[in-house]
Image (cartoon, rainbow, N blue to C red; front, side, top):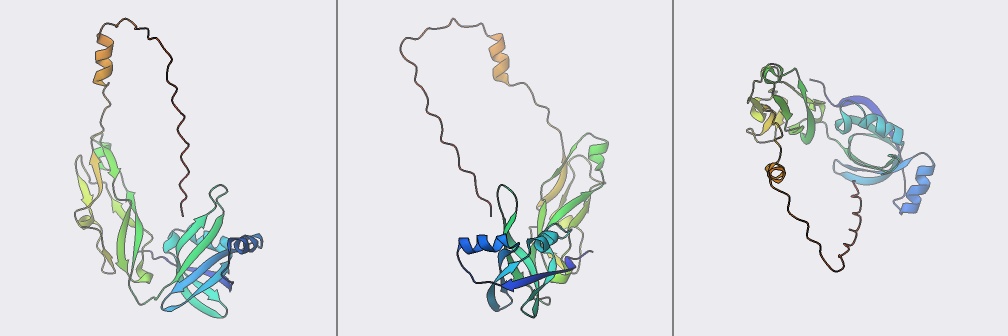
Length: 230
């Protein structure tokens, strides 16, 4: 089982926690603001290279990657727990790093990856439906898997794999309810023509009634504001 521990490191510098203008000035230097906290130590306002953070986020283990943070001569194991992108250009704006104690279990979410072609899809024309795309687990930091792999080859029409059926490991514990469906093979529903349209086609056309007076003009709906995602 591959773990999230990787030979990555992030060089961090102390910065003064300040306003948005200071954060903008920092970004013009090629660094972004961040926070380092956890492990019963004081929180630190830091500045880091976004390229190093993006390399971690884009790795196989993603934000579950454990790496070294080098700050003012001190080194801590850490994970990326929160980050923010600029909505238009997609540039990384801010990052939160959490110190990790390698001898203490932690709770994380890992993706579920499906392998194989289900028998119900290949032979019976069914549809494979991945219901649970991530699963909550608890384990030591060094045992965090990059993903949980599920082989669906034996699944026939109507068959399913639940949390209780996932691969067992002495090093990790699944936190989702055991009867939760992870993936199943279901029927492909054919879209039927709406009954209302069929009835309308069969019914004789009614004579058009000409109405007198002015028509009401509906006001345009106010555009919805884009939701900001942290």
